[in-house]
Amino acid sequence: MQTELRTIALTAILALAPQTFVAQQSPMNAAAAEKDGPAGAKASTPAVDPSFRDRYPRYQLESGDIFDISFELSPEFNQTVSVQPDGFITLRGVGDVHVAGQTVPELTQTLRSAYNKILHEPLISVTLKDFQKPYFIADGQVGKPGKYDLRGDTTLTEAIAMAGGFEDSAKHSQVLLFRRVSDQWTSAQIFNIKKMHASRDLREDPLLHSGDMLFVPKNRLSKIKPWLPTSSVGTMAGAY
Image 1 (spheres, one colour):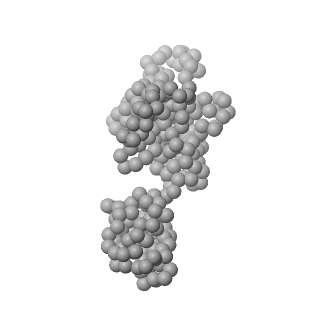
Image 2: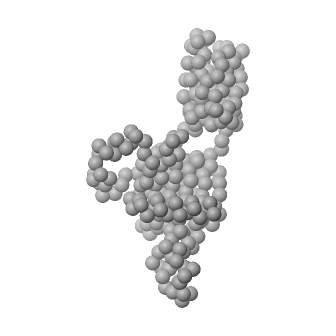
Image 3: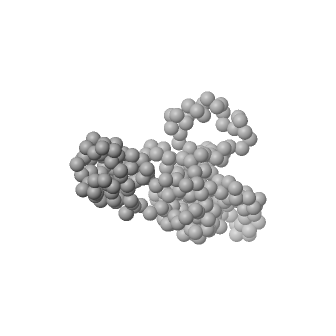
């Protein structure tokens, strides 16, 4: 029942979003869009969201991650800490510090600032020991929906192939890629995989980030097929 409701909701999104890009916008992004004018006013084709172009995103700490903290000149403060469910860590001699969502360089700076209160210009290095392994989720009309390890550079079309490829009921021209931008915002972009394959041009094929979810909706034929005469199905299949 939940799967049917989710499919209906996503179908409604597609019906209301003829453009290639759909997103929940933050107030800042919304203001920028209003300043630039109506969508499509500057170019005939929509620009790809910068968050889908970042080739080498840095890992951000999550609850449950474990890392070593080493002090070059004050080894008595060396320690191994774990990020708690609320995003805090407990540091020896300092106390609780919130670090969830930070990259390793940001974490290192946070630790230096925290220990500056008791040490003079501490030299600190951080080594991740246990952390959330990169992954993506494939859902909808693919051969094997599920959660997959994200190893190395993987594009959207490669991820679909890893998930068993398109089902006969798939709508190749409107594949959705969801990406969490922050705790409150998730961006969603529609990709025309059918056009990419037909033109043999994969320049618009985005690299996945850890946590991305792709969703392949049903095509129109699959929705009306149960009510079609058997002889009509083969004739109409090419139209979708």
